[in-house]
Image (cartoon, rainbow, N blue to C red; front, side, top):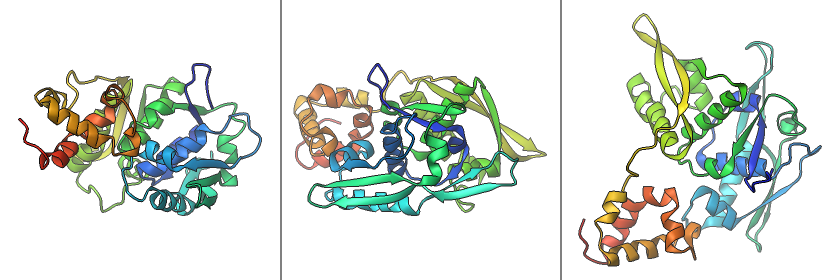
Length: 295
């Protein structure tokens, strides 16, 4: 859905934001893109056509075989499920796939996507209990956990509820984290909670603070509180960039333009993209063998 200011908005029922699923960032962004193509007052699903260029821009992929990657990711969404609680306590749940169909046009480098019909009550003709997500912000996130927290934060803001608490096992399931991953809470806190919090502080207008809920000495839950984002004063790697000579900067920008995301873009446009700064170390490594520069 496109608003008057030109922003693309994805509208989705709160039940889906609260639902359990396990999507990676590429899958999450394709679903969000398709939501953005859907008007809230549509009465039926349409088939949406995604191009290689759009896929590369959404996912930040630099693969040499973008069409094969796009096909693999979209096919995976035919197998990926979402588990929604029916509003009857925790006793009833419904499980279904995100997509019902993918169609491929090999000569054109496009894929056609259609949502599963079971998603209709959660996407079409919504009147209450829905959340609007601004996609220009959504697409900047690099972590699937950050995306899930961004969705939840926007839902809580819409509900005008600044705090929420989740039992630890429910939180892990909501984030799609297996029982074997991050078994120790300290690691879960560092790799999931703190990482998402930091990325939201850098790339969003709202983030969260949290405190542990304990039963005895064991952490059994987490209480979250909304707060304005606290952007760091120094964007990572900008200081390092300032110390490079002009020739090395030019080589890095030339290397960046090899990615579909920045192909044909001006220096100013690339430098204004937050994702460029996160990739500066990798780009430095690529040009390191081509010239000598001051670190």
